[in-house]
Image 1 (cartoon, one colour):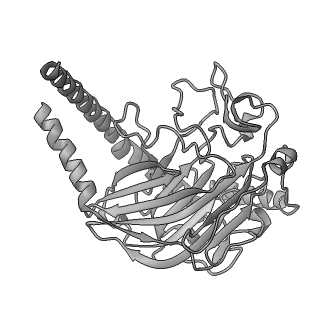
Image 2: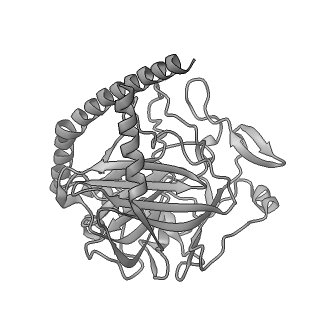
Image 3: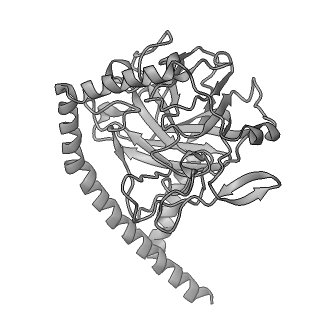
Length: 390
């Protein structure tokens, strides 16, 4: 048993070593907003930095996209897109602070004994809520590129339907040790970091709340979905995204913020779903959290940002509201409701439900069984090692 475990560990380490890594940048090209009535206009968005004063509004998956020189995925080469990251949110009044650094809150006591968010912790970016504060997509556009502001919501099939790659949903500042409670109140869905992938060409599109499978498997041996990044607010930290094509159906993806890295290997149902050339990055913050500011940049050609903490603390719960956002939100809601009554929506949902039943649910059972076997092997190997050495 111990020998088998050693072989498995060696194979994993060897795979990590053999893959050469190439670094890339998403910057140097234009950025486009899906709807400036929603998002506002970033103060910086071309060249080597993107800086955005985040409006306090449910953005309905409206965000930003940039296209860059394509990077071809080939077996044996890992690709890494490197950036800097700085973001912070409003200072809430009734979300209990567990730990301070001087006068700066750095850790929050978010949930009560029944797993409800306390006070106004629902808008505190240091707490986990909903399906991820930020959503970023790294993709092969297959020629489906944007060239103007106001192109429409990112979950529109006519805009992102051809895209293939990965969507990461994550909370940059929430507790890195957070684990989703087993018993949750109704309508409470705090999700740790998780990647999402398209199941097939007829799946819902990136950024949709209904697309893709989330590999949230109880007792899984992978740890990408345990915790968030725990990055400090209002501080420059490292941010990177990785991809490596392992074979015709398997894609390794990873995300790292402030030295906290999460990795996952996706096995596509068909070779047709494997991205070929990565040329697109998109980002949004859809869930009306308390974010005020975001900056990402090319660390080789630009610098980060440091806001005065006295100013942030003094602002309290003041929020940036765009006069145009309310009307835009109403219009987006009407469009979404109309689409959900259409035959195309019903067709996609039927296919997604079928895929879940036939592919995802059995895979979860297989992974859970494999995990228990791996844990048992580990315990047996540990027992054997202790017996031999003590």
